[in-house]
Length: 89
Image 1 (cartoon, rainbow, N blue to C red):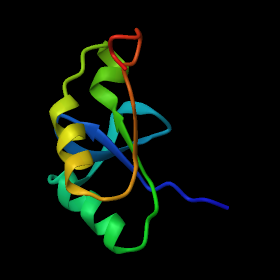
Image 2: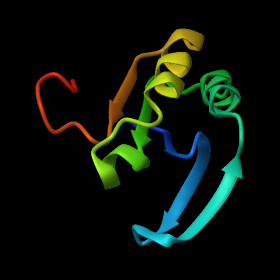
Image 3: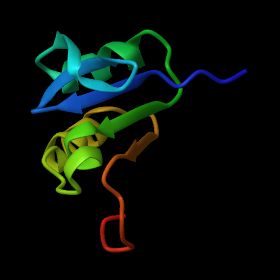
Image 4: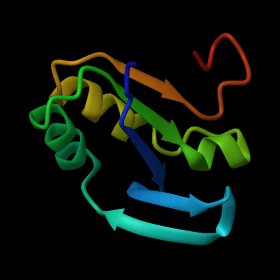
């Protein structure tokens, strides 16, 4: 079994939504890059990052944060959220 730790981004912060409800959000960190590095240090082989702002609006508000995460870690980063066209990918 492969586990993919996930970082969900909203307004540049690490969050979790209760049952996908944007009105029921828990913030668990304000530095996504540090969270990614902690997952890597803990032995993660992959990282999954979701831009929740982009998933909701279609506008990639956290693209720079995703790029910063990918540049900071040595493990592969899978990203999603708001990919609606080939150009988004």
